[in-house]
Amino acid sequence: MMLTPAHHFRDIERKPEYLQPEKCVPPPYPGPAGAMWFIRDGCGIACAIVTWFLVLYAEFVVLFVMLIPSRDYAYSIVNGILFNLLAFLALASHCRAMLTDPGAVPKGNATKEFIESLQLKPGQVVYKCPKCCSIKPDRAHHCSVCKRCIRKMDHHCPWVNNCVGENNQKYFVLFTMYIALISLHALIMVGFHFLRCFEEDWTNLLQAYGLIREGGAEARISLHEKKQPLKISSAECSSFSPPTTVILLILLCFEGLLFFIFTSVMFGTQVHSICTDETGIERLKRKHQPREYRGSWKLVQDIFGGRFSLNWFNPFSGPWHPKPLSDRDWVQQVASTSETDNTEMTEERSGESKDEDSVEVTDE
Image (tube, rainbow, N blue to C red; front, side, top):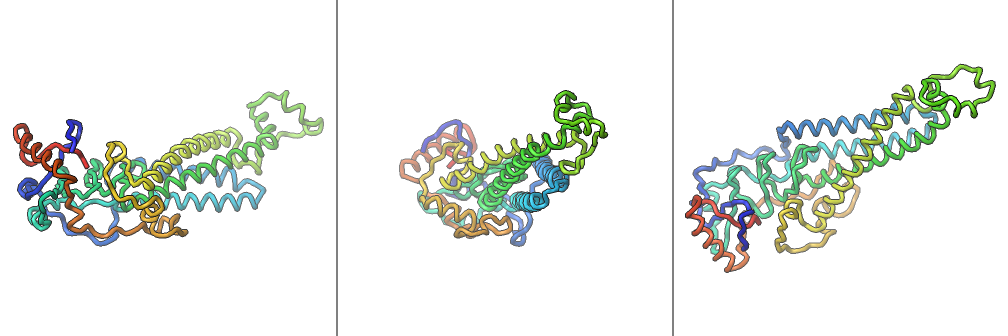
């Protein structure tokens, strides 16, 4: 086992006394199944509110600036239904990702009774998190924002005010996918709106507001049309004035382009993490633990809840339900005898400079 100063401290134990279980408060009585999970973090709550505001702003511009004023009713109905459906699924996925327990390890379970009940054998170790006083199963990591250890933690996302972990990764993937789709849909509609309306209806309106020169427009206006008063409203393109409409559409275009790029990258990253069975934290820490490879398709099925069906795209359909942690999930086997010897030597050396309950090892 490689030992470097850059790694974090963890408590590796073979006896309950090393963990100082008397300092751990027993975990509270578990709440009912399906209880709502919510992180009280000011930054995360603000980011979640901003997310909803941006989606609702896009809804306002698409409906009241582009679709409702249009005289092409088939175009408005089809795009209105499609955009609202995608926006609803995006917000529903956001709520599920934010309010679902990502896979938190029971807090304060590093008690003497629990450790003794594991009946550790030679070559077996357990890992304790000194921050939340819980025994960490394999691939669990502590989140400083959630203040809990999360199973298969990928990262903490402020936009959903939650960690992305074992239980809510499906909802986060759906959230990024639907946001990317509505962003792309909004960009396409903005492009069509500019092409259809700018030349046909806005030339005279912009001339009336003094936003373009009269010379270019006069060539297209007949003598009879010049004698007619300029219309200051265009029911087909927008119920707002041209300057207001242009500003609203430019802001929507900027928002759509920014979030399309961002969420597309996040969606691709999450799909890659699922297919390779490697979380974002494990990738950043260069941790290549030997694990049984079950195939990319099987891994995707585990996250999205079984065989391929429309429920994969349904944020109200839960992912696979992991089995409750058994005793063997808390215990980890030392890979080899040499690694065990290295760990024991590190424990002896660490006694000179730090407490007996803390040693420096690879964060596996």
